[in-house]
Image (tube, rainbow, N blue to C red; front, side):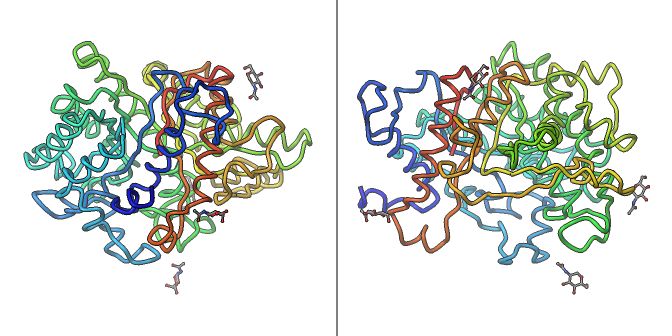
Length: 459
Ligand SMILES: *[C@@H]1O[C@H](CO)[C@@H](O)[C@H](O)[C@H]1NC(C)=O
Ligand SMILES: *[C@@H]1O[C@H](CO)[C@@H](O)[C@H](O)[C@H]1NC(C)=O
Ligand SMILES: *[C@@H]1O[C@H](CO)[C@@H](O)[C@H](O)[C@H]1NC(C)=O
Ligand SMILES: *[C@@H]1O[C@H](CO)[C@@H](O)[C@H](O)[C@H]1NC(C)=O
């Protein structure tokens, strides 16, 4: 095994671990094998895949007509802790054939990737870049030749810089029209081979990281909020405005797909959210209510409009007039716009009631939520302190979505554990990551056995 593993780049080691975990046994699903489960414990049409995003793998950041995204600007201003940038990244723009070959050799069935908007439409709207189309056509064809199904994300954080400069990107309603036009190009050009579309990756994390905390571009926040110096923005209002425009852009794009393409192309369209494995710290009535509220703020913020046509009551009450509202027409548009929900999951949050926060006049998302959050992103799912009978936060989230949103189809689009560069480069005996993946995949299996409509798992 060691010899085989060494020929792959470290980028693929999670995929290989997945196959080690799943491929070890051809026995019936007795739960008796070394891992406690095997591939055939899962439904035959359940898919396993691996995912990436454009900025993290493509490189060629300024080549063949691509213009900068807000991530190019951000990294070139030296904003990454290690001062890195994605100019070359995994060089997938040039090395896609090699990478697809590695995927095929690894036995990958599905590859999730995102399209760089400013590679396809360099000004954000208007003229299409033929070189951009050519790259994605080549990649999709190469995948198809190797029997690997593409799942495509339209927006994975890398907004064209021009749209940020012109009208502040997602803070403006103008983004809706431009996003639809960009999506239309993608459906028209790639939809004959791509049948699973995700509009926005981690809508909730994008909005909070970019407009409340200032971790990510466009780095907006206002004092006293935000993890870094706030120079422009408004943490009390902008996250809610950006989220609202994201919901409208997603829904209008889904309507376009359903009206113009779905009959011909037989595909599906959904959105992606991070889920947080929200966990109780105590069993007090107040903390139980805070836990429910935290799920409503983090997930319900998007999922309630998508499945019920409006924001959660707790958000309307606590955020008040800072929360935009849907017209009856928009509510209907948003409500029928998801064929599936994409879920990213990495770790869990412990939640404790914080009623004092509502006495503060100027409130951001965290104060509006009235809950203290204690994050634990590092622990493997298997060793987290948990409710009895739920071995991982992901399982708890899948149960939550099943019960609250009437069991929609789910793809777990991202799950995995980072390891240090030293461990990645030198160690094949990656036991902590094996334990992490095992714990989460077991949690998914338990959720499936309890009726969750989860359709696939991507590392
Ligand atoms: C905040 O701004 C001050 C003054 O410009 C600077 O010294 C400090 O490093 C900044 N802090 C962060 C976290 O960027
Ligand atoms: C943020 O917007 C609200 C509502 O418009 C306003 O009351 C508040 O003063 C603004 N905060 C900042 C820091 O600009
Ligand atoms: C891998 O690491 C685990 C835990 O440290 C150890 O028990 C095991 O023997 C190691 N296996 C190999 C092949 O080195
Ligand atoms: C299994 O599903 C039932 C019915 O939806 C639910 O009441 C129960 O809590 C679930 N069990 C676990 C362990 O999540």
